[in-house]
Image 1 (cartoon, rainbow, N blue to C red):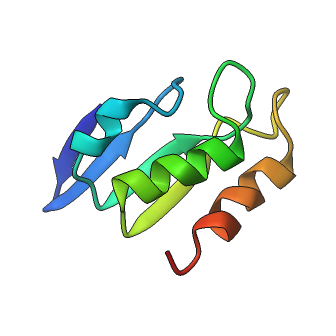
Image 2 (image 1 turned 90 degrees about the vertical axis):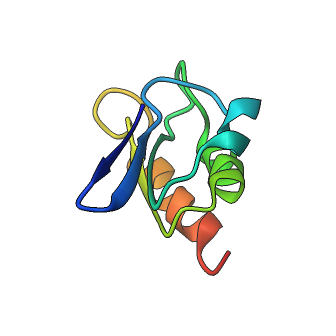
Length: 82
């Protein structure tokens, strides 16, 4: 799902994997799942972020029963400076 709020384009990936259609999405902020349980792993989310090219990447769906805190830290570390 993508929306524009105050001129900022948001992309909420929800429960998904990295998909080819992400190449067609323009966003400033991307919220990407990282737990690897039914969704992308942190590494796959990093690849999705490189495809989406947002200014800000926010990891989600980790650390509360699925995934670990490390999953949440991996995504920003994998996309820093890219």
